[in-house]
Image 1 (cartoon, rainbow, N blue to C red):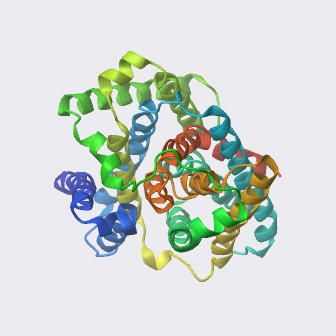
Image 2 (tube, rainbow, N blue to C red):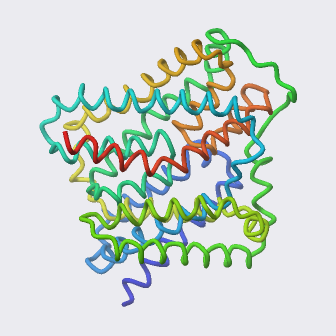
Length: 381
C-alpha cells in the first residue's frame, strides 16, 4: 500500500513540478517537458527502487490518464471562426502528405525489419499516424488502442524526439527563408513578435473549481465510453473506448454554454498527458531497448517527417497555398500546436497563429480515428 501511494504521488507531482518550472525556465519548453519527464522516468525506473506494486500502479495510472486527457484537450476546441478555405487546403494537403508517406514508408522499411512482427510494425505505423496528424494526446490513446508494447512505445517516441528535434532546428534557422522562397509569401495583416508566454497567459486565469468541474466531466465521458465498450462485441474494447471517447469529446466541444463554463481545459489535459508519459517511461527497462538494432524505425520516422514535408510543398504549389501557412501547418502536424506561436514569432506573422492552431486541433480530433484505421488496414495485409 505504501509503495502504491508513493508511486501515485511521484507520478502526479513530478509532471506538475516540471510544468511549473517550465513557466519560469524557458529552456525546459525549448527541450520539451515531455523529454524531461522521459529522462526522469527512465532514471527512476532503472534505479532499482521500482518494485512489482509500483510497476502495476504505473500501468493503472497510464491507462486512466490517457482517457482523461482526450476529453480535456478536445472539449475546449473551437472549430468556428477560422478562415475555412485556408485551413481546409492546408490541413487536407498536409494530412494527405503524411498518410501517403507513412503508407509508402511501411512497405519500404517493413522488409528491412527482422526484430518486429508484421502486427507490431503495423502498430508502429498506427502510432506514427497519430503523432504526425494529431500529436502527444494521440500517441497515448492509439498505443493503448492497438496494444503497442511499452518498450516499443518508448523506442518510437525516443526516435521521434531525435528527428522532430532536427526538424525543429531546420525550421528555426532555415524555415522562413526556404518556405517563402519556394512558395508565395503571405502578407501579414498583423506583424510583430508572438511568444509562448503571450498565449500561455490565457490559461493562467482559470479558477480551481473550473478545473475540478472539467475533470468531473472528463470522468463522466470516460465512464460512458467504457460503458459503450461493454455492450459492443469486439476483440479490442480499448479501440472502442478511444473512438467513443473522441466522438463524445468532439460533440461536447460544440456546446457553447459548457465551454463558457469550463474555460480552457487544454493545459489540464496536457498535464495528464505528461503523467502518462512519466508512467510509461518509469515502466521501461532501458537495457531492453535496442536503439541500434531498430534503426529501420528511425529511418522510417525520418522518411515520414521530411518526405511529407516535400510532398506538402508540392501540393502547396498545385493548390497555391502560401509559404507561411504551409510552414505553420507542417509544424502543427509534426511537432504539435504548442509550437505554433514560436513559428509565428519567427515569421513575424500573427495571422498564422489561428490557422496553425486550427490545423493542430483538427489533427487532434481525427488522429485517433486515422491511427486505429491505419493499424487495421495494414494488419489485414
